[in-house]
Image (cartoon, rainbow, N blue to C red):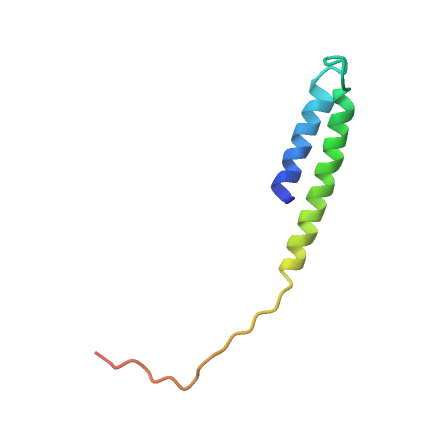
Length: 74
């Protein structure tokens, strides 16, 4: 899960938690499902940021060839 999916879960959870009445569906309380989605979205967002930060701390090796001859003048 990345940053985009974390934001998506937060938005869907906010819609379920705050925009829908809790007694809309008798099988499951949609407010609780919304709060769970918000928590999962925040967790996914934090994990995505941590993984992107670790990815930016990589080292790269650059090889330079100094003994090249310049191109001929036209």
